[in-house]
Length: 196
Image 1 (cartoon, one colour):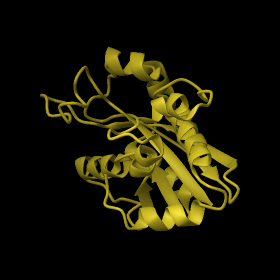
Image 2 (cartoon, rainbow, N blue to C red):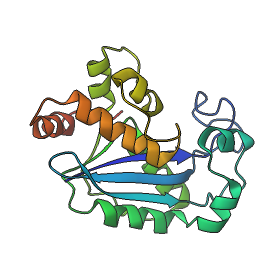
Image 3 (cartoon, rainbow, N blue to C red):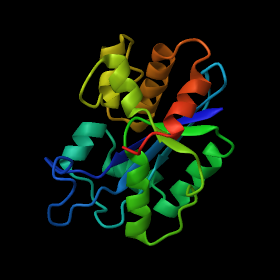
Image 4 (cartoon, one colour):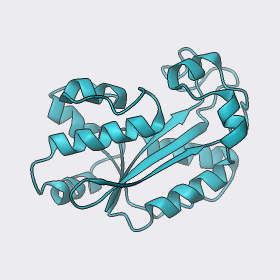
């Protein structure tokens, strides 16, 4: 079993390009979404957790428009970061690998440090699929999750920049870019790759 996940973060126009270095900007996690895939790469379970940001509790108009995640949903469904990470750790427990398309693990670590909490995911087997997708797409640049359906020729599984839709897009792209029986080899190759 593997887990593929995606995060959504607080953001403002240009904040990602600035690495959230503007006044008061922090890439706080606002959504953790994941899918669990069996050995045949079929989805067997899904997780979608909304997280209440602490430092910037009011979402920007920019991130609302980008993700479709509303302030009302955050206020109604949102849990604190520690609870969200525990839910994710429980969901991913026993996975051979926990995969994302890029540096999502670093954002978890950054949020844990920012909140001053324990990381329940610290000993879990994370790896990034970014390099795999660049090679498969023959691209020098990172292929963002929301672009994977177009790049690899499949229907988008939902709204771009929704965490669960993006996790499902990553999962489908893995299926389309792996040779039959190639999952174990991919996991082996990713486990030695430098983090993105």
